[in-house]
Length: 158
Length: 158
Length: 158
Length: 158
Image 1 (cartoon, helix red, strand yellow):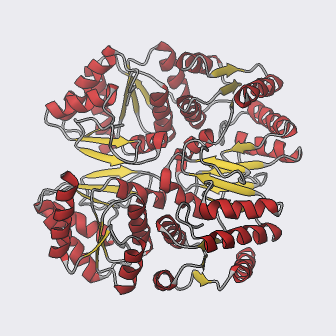
Image 2 (cartoon, chains in turn brown, cyan, blue, orange):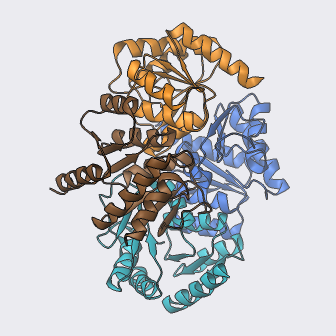
């Protein structure tokens, strides 16, 4: 999860690597599906590494779909689809920060899902850590995020 | 799409074959995802033929998920997820009839999606044909449904 | 519930009277909220009789809102809001028939809500009666629909 | 908007007064509808002052409905209903903080709705102010929140 239109270059670069390493780990990569920002970059990274990508799009038809999404789920429900994004994920990695991303993190925590924050900024880290100390994990970089996701997935399957 | 709990044996058998032939045609099979009735049988048929299966489940966690679903999308929105099922499909094949199935057909027609009816019964055929003469196609059997879906998909991609 | 854009004059006239008599019975009138067809007419009838009207609109802002709706609920989820319409109703009266209306009737029956059909046409009556013999009631005219709704509401509160 | 189960006594007391003053200002009070925490208190305050209260409940039937809600909208879509709460509001007042509340604030900002924070805590204020400097307003107390809501509503209607 991460910003679309207003994603920063560093977030986009990290998202690409998160997608690539997730695919290499054998994980399915699920994003908001649009052809911009973190969603697009994570899907691209995953596809280039031979992974499978899912996009849960807010529109009723996949008009702004990333070309790197294999499976497009058209919800037609706008930002309410953010709840589907997190309910359908085992681990949520948030890369960067924005209003939609913040709603996804909050909805994930509400649904008791583990969330890993990358490039969130100190203020956001403070906030979400206060909101849910147990389910929020801070990652120092892409590799750290992937390693922490592996540990969380292992603990879920045990 | 088709009945879950109250599916008839013939509908289940047809759903299995629809799933199998869809997978053999190279299509992704999307169902309501539950471990019962037409959803489960179509997913099973598709998996046994090496296909990819998506399940859009009504619950917030995939507790009643068919074991033949590869990708589970947990919506947590009950029957409102029926709209996502049809928005995410290129062609809707309804196998058998029930209240949920009827809602999916009506929502599909509302979204201007082509619908193929198999084992719907005369009364249902009459009703949906009256409702949308152009978008409702009647299939005589599984092979006929698959052939008509092929024609519809070809016309969509042209 | 009933057709919007393609509502027939007789359906619109009946919807107005249904709204009026519902308000006079002390009921809150809930519709799909748009400024057209059965939704608009039922809200208008209810308002002119001093009733309270709710509109559950498909858009994320109430741009096409009927001027006779007191409380607009903006869902931003398109036709998936049809499920909210029926879940929030004690009794569903369908006036006329169309694709959206058919989806609402089917979703209502799936949610075990009583449905009264007015001006549905023989084919639709046959279909929905077959689908759910117990929860589908046929009304001969507006007064009959209101009387049958009263009986259903009495039985729900007992 | 505000916490349900884990609401603090001071938040509940403020929510009651927010509801009362909102009703006295002639506003409709819309909450998440449940019989607990800030939702219940705001509805209670509004009802005791003769106001009209709407509750957008997450369940498919209003089983945990606050007794102070006049109009219950049953969404059956869990936390995804948080988006409906904010889309249907002209101004969002968040009283206290929690995971659901945070998701509502973020979804409101995403939908470009003005948000007033009361009893949010410094960390949350920092975070949301950074996220959307223009649409986030801080209130010092209940009266200040109501005054600021009045100004925002006036600017919306001009």
